Length: 213
Ligand code: 0O2
Image (cartoon, rainbow, N blue to C red; front, side):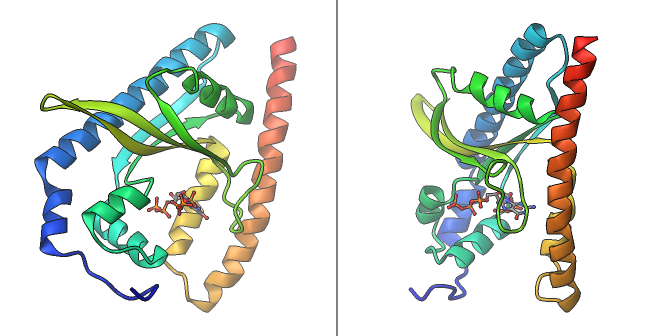
C-alpha cells in the first residue's frame, strides 16, 4: 500500500467498530481507567492534604478519527490493523493543577498490578515540535466480557490545567492546517507553550511556599 493513499474502511471493519462487544469492552476499559485515576487521586489527596486531579474524562476515538489516523500513518484501514497499531482508540485524560502532581499520579498508577504500562512518553520533559506538552502512558488493562478476559490497550494523558488549555487551543488550530495564517499562529502558539511551561514551574514554586507557611 502506498503511504498516504486514501483508504476508506470496508463495511465489515466499520461493523466491528460499531459492534456492541467493541463498545461494551471499550466503555468498560474507560470506566476502569477512570476508577484508577479516582483511586490514585484519593490516595494522593489523603497524603498531600489537597485535591490532586481536578478533572478527568475519557472517550472512544470516533471512526472518522481512526480512519484519518490510519491514512496519516499509512496503516491498512482495517479493524485488526487499527486495533494493533493505534494506541489511543481508547483514551482517558487526567488534569492536575501542578506539574509535579502529574508525575505523582503516574507513579501511583505504576504500582497497580492490574495495569500494564507498555510505553511512557514524556512530552513534558521533551515537548513535541508543535510545543505540545503532556505525559502519556500507553497501558493495557484486563477486561472481562462474556466469560473471557482480554487485555485492552489505551492511552492515559496526564497534564496540568495550563497544558490542557494550550492543547485545546492547538487542537482548534489543527483544523485550519494548510492555511497561510495557521503557520504564523502555530509559531506564536509554540512560544506560548514555553510561557505555559514557565507558568507551571512558577506555580509549583508558589505552592511550595504556601505549603511552608
Ligand atoms: P486526537 O485529537 O486525539 O484525535 P505513536 O503512538 O507514536 O504511534 P501517536 O498516537 O500519534 O503515534 O502518538 P502521539 O504523538 O503521542 O499522539 C497521541 C495523542 O496525543 C494525539 O492523538 C493527541 O490527542 C495528542 N497530541 C499529540 N501531539 C499533539 C499536538 O501537537 N497538539 C495537540 N493538541 N495534541 C497532540 P491524535 O489521534 O493525533 O489526535
